Amino acid sequence: MLALGALGVVYGDIGTSPLYALRECFSGPHGIHPTPDNVMGVLSLIFWALITIVSVKYLLFVMRADNRGEGGILALMALVMHRPRGARAPHPARPVLLTLGLFGAALLYGDGLITPAISVLSAVEGLSVATPVFESFIIPITLVVLLVLFLVQRHGTGGIGIVFGPLMCVWFLTLAVLGVAELVHNPTVLWALSPVYAVRFFMANGGQGFLVLGAVFLVVTGGEALYADMGHFGYKPIRSAWFMLVLPALMLNYLGQGALLLRDAEGARNPFYLLAPGWALYPLVVLSTVATVIASQALISGAFSITRQAMQLGYCPRMEVVHTSAEEKGQIYLPGLNFMLLVGVVLLVLGFRTSSALAAAYGIAVTATMAITTVLSYVVFRERWNVRRAVALPVAGLLLAVDVSFFGANAVKIADGGWFPLALGVAIFTLMTTWKRGREILAAKLRAASMDLKDLLESFKGEHAPLRVPGTAVFMTGNPEGSPPALLHNLKHNKVLHEQVVLLTILAEDVPHVVGDERVEVNPLEQGFVRVIARYGFMENPSIPDILKRGREQGLQFQLMSTSFFLGRETLIPAKKPGMPVWREALFSWMSRNARSATAFFRIPPNRVVELGTQVEL
Image 1: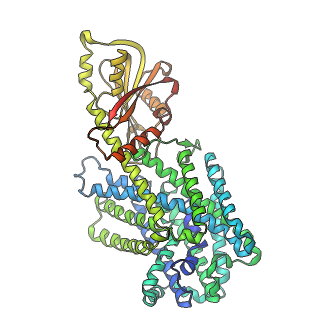
Image 2: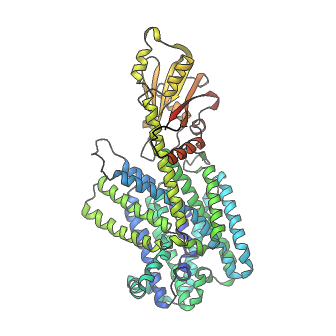
Image 3: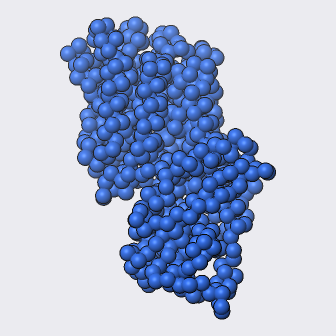
């Protein structure tokens, strides 16, 4: 059942590649003439790309580098950066690895935007194979499908997600049947599985053959999704689904398209839809559209997930996170991000207008992410699991050479539209690093303006003790040691102190989940003060009600109706000697103003909140 579920989430992207991948090898901007030798060579490259990238790299190598069961480049980066207690000093290259991991994550947004656009557009373009009458309706139909897809996100995938797996199972079986139907007429195409044809292809075509790799790479663009979605299904179900159904179905379909081209080279204009008999064309368009919607859903859910991880790791401002399922914690919806994705996808469809034009922009960002994943995986195997260099280095070096080759072949796409995912990746990387750096500077400023808690408690003794009022005050602070600025402001202006004062700190750990007994730590202090430290993983959402419930189990006494939550609200003003360039300071201030309020994000009862403002020079 898990393998069936993986079909609907993990393999949507890679499973819809037959719609356009082989077509781009022969009809794309850098396509090559579909002679029998070239067809056999390209088919050989496709087969060995699937084996090398998916079967060997991800299923046998990378997916073993999991962060407590979770995958994805941010989880991998957190695993690289996490230093266990008693571990040796971090390697001097650690900042470089951190930068690589962040940049790889940022690049995923670029190709993540292109995937829904190119997938749905290529499916709807099948109508033009049936008759040219539909040519003018392709873009409007595509936009309607995408609009509906993004509008239903607020309802979650819990209900329709149940049928994703069976539908994709039907899709892969259809791919296999279409391929076999053509393959039986020319079984000699099976010889393309030999790597000899790939070698001959490069020897015969030289530089042009190398450029075709950029189109061949389209067959493995969904490879990173295998790793990113590992936490939902586990390693074994994903592996089983690949070897039992997905890989055979994909190769049978690609071989069938190749057999079609050996019979009729004119079929290169759209070999996938030309595999189908006339009566099956319209049903195939409908099934293809459904499959591409499912593939797009997986990319959208992935964008939601990686954004939540970035928020928890401190690289993204707080955003609204809506849980669409009471049972499945991983099913979330981010309204703001959903709207931005919709606008981006619509602009891509209107700007590029055809799936062939989008294919020219597709791939370069994900090749860079795959190369970064290889480097980070090597570090994990060497430092965390002590795999010998003599074993890890040759394997990682070979896989990195393959990644770099594909990146080089895709680099020529930059002028044809490949600049878009790269530019978007750079922009998101700038936002992430600016937010992280700005929060670090702000935290340092607040610590400098703070007061040692021991000194503060000592000052309450004797005749200088403040007036105590009934109830509990909860002061949230990012510093688990000092006194919160909001507490000092409350004393300065209101000159009172509650009978019980809770200093609450929420820490984000470099692991996906924190076990229950390690979640909340309650430390009673002097004079009615209590220090509470809550820990959450980067796949979890902090919740004040949950923290208070766990605190009560550890002896924290309070009544919610007599509890006030004090939050600090910082107003950022320019400093004479700014800690960042002026433009980054302005960018950070803008992000801070638009971040979701702490009250809503941490689910604090809004009628129990008191906000105390302060001005901070950056």
